[in-house]
Length: 287
Image (tube, rainbow, N blue to C red; front, side):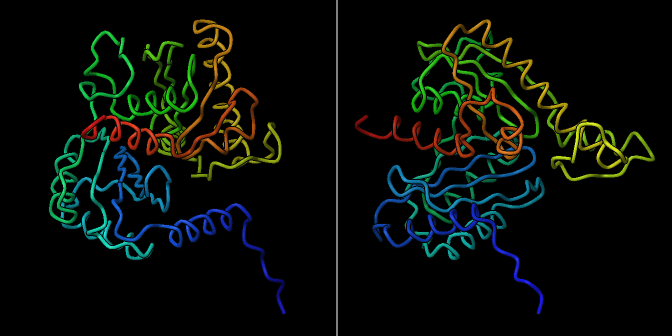
């Protein structure tokens, strides 16, 4: 009989937390939905008060309709044991303008509520010192608000998404600006498309920095190369922000990169969702 492969402990922990969240949830209470619309993935999280429960990632589909996205969200909720009419409030950050209106329509049609769409003009609890505040991506604003509320400043936020972004928050809660680099997946895809003999590879840790075959060589350059990028940029940000700068990592590859460096002091994979909840609460009546 083949030996059973144990389930990863981390996945077990996540599922247990979600099960506990569902059992403890106050049925009929006001549920909050956070939606982060990115160029590659759409991340959703359901909150009961300040507690984050089930969360989901879906591939960004630019051609999908409001009905398709509405049906997708309702199917996610059914699996979590949540009825659509329990969602009483929604906030969203979008860097894909065509999908902003699509999700607004989906939320109004399927949850009967108008979502708060965060941008530079939204009350966030932080001051934006960018030369043109309207050019700052909504996700970067939300991350900065969450970072300052949860961890204080000065801080450097490293978000591993479609792009790898670095954002600076001052000790006074000011968004100072940042830096944008191509994401790891973009770099990997560019290599595959431009070099005929290079294969697609998974972004995982190779056995050593010196690859003994093409796959390991690519993985080394991508993973360890980006670790070097992160370490170099964080060092420069700390030099400008001053001593005591905290470094917060978020995004899909945050945990993988954090295992290879000591410069990332905190890994917060759901920072953007938490920021949407914080900003929604800040803009709720009576606050």
